[in-house]
Length: 421
Ligand SMILES: O=C(O)C1=C[C@@H](OP(=O)(O)O)[C@@H](O)[C@H](O)C1
Ligand SMILES: C=C(OP(=O)(O)O)C(=O)O
Image (cartoon, rainbow, N blue to C red; front, side, top):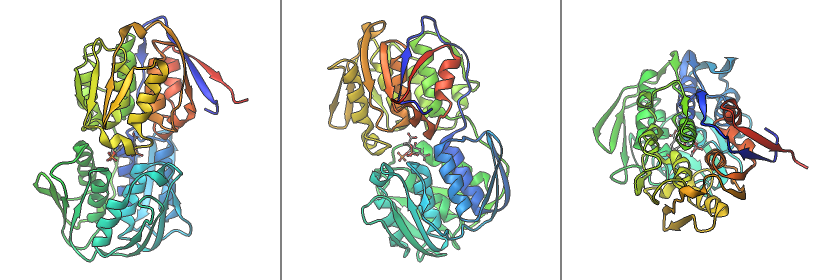
C-alpha cells in the first residue's frame, strides 16, 4: 500500500467470514536459515512472504544459496550447506530474526560478512550476542552495540561453551542454538539469568532444528547441549502466524463476530497463541496480564483493553521497549491520542484505563505507528469501534502481514485510503 494513511469506518455489523493468517514469520525465518545451512534442496511450504522473510531470502541468495519461489507460500532452497562471504553488506531491514540469526550463523562461516539493517534495526541491541561470540574467539564487532555487525569468520569457535544474557532478546539464544549444530564438537549454551522472556521461541527454534536433523539436549531449564550434526535438507511445512491471528481474534471479540482463521488456537506452537485465552475473556479480561510469554500480542490486547469492562495492567513487558519501536510508549501515546488519560506508563508496566463507552463515539485521532507493523495492526482494531481513527504509514504492515488491510476489507470493513499529496 502506497497510501499515507488509512481511516477505518467502524462496521455496522459483526465481522464474520474466513481469513487465514499468513505463514509464521518466526518459523519461516528459522526454516530459511536452516535450509540454507543444509546441503541439498528443502521445500518450505505455508511460508510467509513479507519484508522480514524477503530480507532473509535475499541475504541467503547473496551468499550463494538458490532460493526459488514457485508460488505465493513456498520457498525452494538449494544450498551447498555453506554461506559464502558476500561481496556487499547484508541488508536486513528491521528484521530482528534475520539479523540476530544470521549474525551467529555467519560467525561459523569463512571470510568477511557485514550484517546491517535500516535506521530502526540500527537502534536495536545486539551487543550481548556479539560479546558471546567474542568469548568464543570470533573476530566480530558492532561498535554501537547495534547493527552494523562486522564478522571475520574462520569456520570454527575456539570454545565449546557459551554463556548468554538473553534479557533483551530471546533471539540471541535461538541464534546461538541454530549456529551451534554447524560446529565440530558438542556445544553447550547456558543462560546468564535464571529464565528467559518468550521461552516459547526457544521451543520453536529447537523444533525447527530437529526437523532439519539436529540433536539437542536440555540438561537444565537454562542450558542446552547441541550435537555437531549439521543440518539435513528436508521438506517442511510452516503453520500460520499466531501473532497475526491475534488481530483477527481481536476483531472477532470486539465486533461479537465469528471469524474462521482455519486453525484452532490450541493447534499453534507459537507463544503468541497464548493470547487467545485472554482475548476470549473480553470484555472481562483480567486486571493484570503478564506479557512475558506472549510479547508480540501485547499491543493487540492493550488496544482491546481500552474497551474492556475494567482496567488492565500489563506486566513483564519491559523488552517491548526494544522491539521495532518502544511499544510501551507507542501504545500509550496512541491510546492517549484517542482520549487523554486512557493509558499510563508506570516504570515498564502499561496501564490501560478501560472505557467501554468509547465504542460508537467519534474521536478523531491520527495514530503514529512509528514504522511498527504491530502498532498499525492493533490500532486498526480501535477503528472498528471508534469513528475517525486514522492509521499513519499503513504500509508498514508489510513487515509481517502484507495482506492485513485486504483481510479487513474481505471481512466487510470499509477503509478510506488517504493518498499522499
Ligand atoms: O524468535 C523469534 O522469532 C522472535 C522472538 C521475539 O523477540 P525477542 O526474542 O527479541 O523478544 C519476538 O518478539 C519476535 O517477533 C520473534
Ligand atoms: C519484534 C518483532 O520482530 P523482530 O524482532 O523479528 O524484528 C515483531 O514481529 O513483533
